[in-house]
Length: 73
Image 1 (tube, one colour):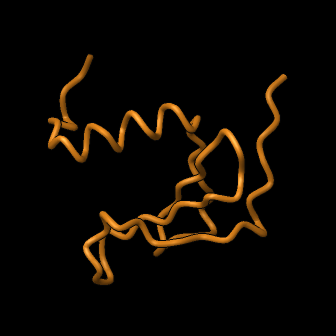
Image 2: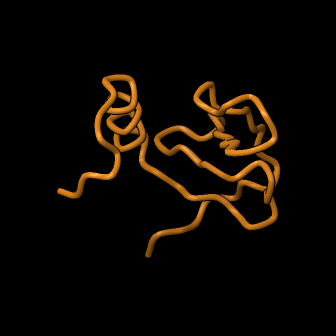
């Protein structure tokens, strides 16, 4: 069984890829080895999505390369 990590006391930081305004703000946490919790800063009580650190790194590498994030596959 996989346990959901406790993130209620996590320290969050706004992603450097957020636009800096009040919209489209993503927060991430670096407090949990091996995983990366991600949440919407406008709706923090809605919970977080949990990604493996390797999946998050691959996603960020694609963002930095300008990959088409709408592509499936």
